[in-house]
Image 1: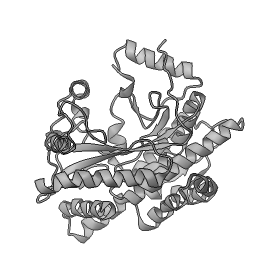
Image 2: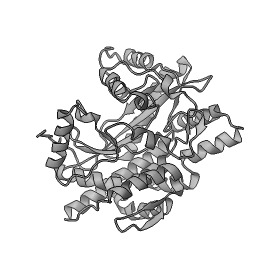
Image 3: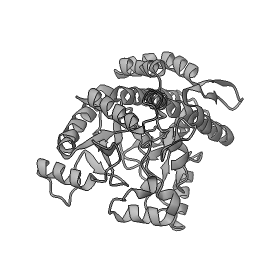
Length: 382
């Protein structure tokens, strides 16, 4: 059996990963200049080219970089680091005529035309997954939350899957794909799950069951490393965290802060519940799959399944009640204003809704979707 040690971590500490696309300022199309950007960042910081930048990383595609934070206790601290790192990145990209863009997908770029980063693990991914792998022109936001006990990891993973449609609906920002309106709020959600080890996680009753699963995946060659398990929610043993990977990419730092606060509050609330001797409900598989599809299709208009009994509610209504329920937790964690940002997001509209509004107002110009998104990022991070 594959023994997996769970690192020590302080309960409810957080870290955020923000995948950002590089787009040409004039054409609004993707541009594959990540290597050039990363080299300049390293030169500016005095970092040898063979080493990675500490906070700005390469990703699968050469049109993408990923900004990562360190470990923080509050959402405000994490947001401040994200803002500073985006400023650092922008100081390099702006003179190159490159803008920063983030949504679940790019509205008109040709997916199969995007060059892949020259790393063995990325080459192996594309070789194995072929057409589906070449479609992965997608961007997301991931939130890690620290756990002080390994035994909390799997129940809280199940607990966050119960909120999959909530996170999906709030962040949905990929209605367009290759110059077409897909009819979905999040095309990314359904695209990413085509990879063999992506999608909704399996349910495990014990850590040893999870270890057996990982051992089987390694033994049969499905994965070469545990990091290749790319579930929508997953335990990350080497960091001592649970990682929420559901969300489409978001251009608004305020929205990322709201999503981070919701994640932190839910995990902290579940942790307290487990310590009190309670169990986290596990939704039946068929409801978990259906909820993901509904949120990807309808976004904030999705009617979601709440429990094993099949009770249903409009996702935005349930979010309002959850924000109210979690507010005492948010006050304890110092993220009450950021959690209230969930309500502001609902009232303003999610990114997929804004994109469709911009598209209609511009007479059908996909470039205006990109430019509006770029402008929002600039406004939020300056």
